[in-house]
Image (cartoon, rainbow, N blue to C red; front, side):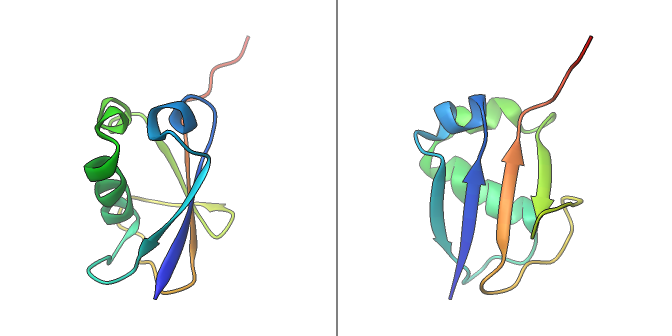
Length: 81
């Protein structure tokens, strides 16, 4: 069982990759996917309070449930002018 994880912009730099797969065992929600990723890439921790989350191509809450085969994406905060 696995979850596909995508990292965008500066989060990809912090994670050291644009994409990875995490085992779904013990993963219950989107934030637990982020927790698993920060265990392997501690630089992601600095984004915890500002990261934008997506689940299967739709914005999600940290508590949104995940299932085997889902895709979770992490985006840095966006600003515009």
